[in-house]
Amino acid sequence: MLSRLQDFLTRHRRKFVVTGVLVGGTIYAARYAQRKLVEYQERQAREFFERSRRMHHFESTERTCNQVILGMGEEMCQAVLHECSTDELLEQLRQNPTNKLELWEQMKIVSFTRLATFVYASSMLVIALRVQLNLLGGYIYRDIMTEQRQITDELKQQYLSLIRHFITHDGIRDLARFIRSQVVEVLKSMPLTRQLTLADTEQIFWSLQMAINGDTRHDPNSKMNVQRDA
Image 1 (cartoon, rainbow, N blue to C red):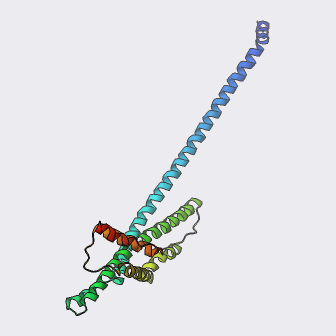
Image 2 (image 1 turned 90 degrees about the horizontal axis):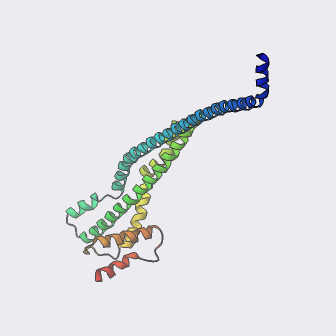
Image 3 (image 1 turned 90 degrees about the vertical axis):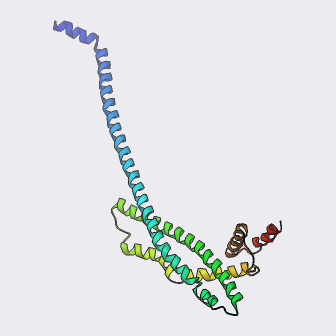
């Protein structure tokens, strides 16, 4: 019986070897595939966690940015109102002075200056704060991921104090004075009795923008007369 079994194994040895290789290879391939699948799932989980963490950090930075803009925006508005105040002019007009026409002319200049300063200062504030806070947020996120602390609270305050300096010191004042000089040039030929349409107002601010940008070779305000005559 043993001889028959030995003879059977000898005659089918090649088949047994091939079958063993196939079975062993299949088991090894299955284990390898399972290990790679686990690694892939773990990598996907880490990437998902990382994306979620970045998204949460970005959303937190955006919320902080909006809150800071609202807080500093009110402070900026007060600075503009203080620099472009009409209280003194209104008080003089209530006394019915002889130079009433001159005072109303000044009121016109101050009103347009205040509105234009609001627009430019608000844009500068929003852009500067968003850039600053997103840069800070990026550095803070890097510190969290590398478990280092290179961005200190003192450095944050110094960084944000740059925009506060613009509001509380000479920034708003210099901006308002520069805009006022351009407003005087743009509105010097416009009489007080002129009734402005929405299109006229748009042309005035377009002219003012061109003047502020330094390009005064063409005066878009001249189109107002053409449109009114048409």
